Image (cartoon, rainbow, N blue to C red):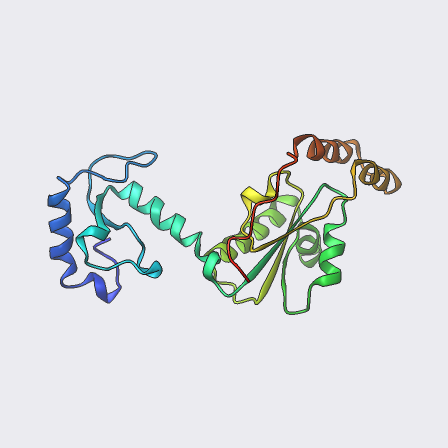
Length: 215
């Protein structure tokens, strides 16, 4: 991190960095996936944006480049927790009516991360294009850089609570029979029917994950 442009990485950082590397025998103290063991950088154990001290030796440890970069990426992806955007995850099986729920409750200033909505706004391009656009929006949400007051994410994944950021979660579950009936009335293809059945088969009857932040 010695090449970081932040003023705090100027003097006395070079001296502090060298002291920590020598203290830790230039051996990575994180030892994450793919660790090279050879420390060339110094990591802040408690990140600065969470109140960690810049130069306190107790908050510093030697790190290899790979482990330090992994830590930085993870920190960036966690900024949504304390950002100003209230994220609502709306989940449920295919055909549950998640998009309808969001349309009925979202305001014009809200951000909506919904596959069908994005596809329509882009004039229905190939699925890969829609997914690329959706993933880009999700990355911005994780980084806390969208500036939106509220964002809605819809997902038909059975494990959506573990895959998406959220402060509030809403489960739309009309039941297997109702979803199948709706799919048949809409003449959905067999793959769609199987996706509904798979959601109910994979879904564990456990309590939904709690919000990561009190609002």
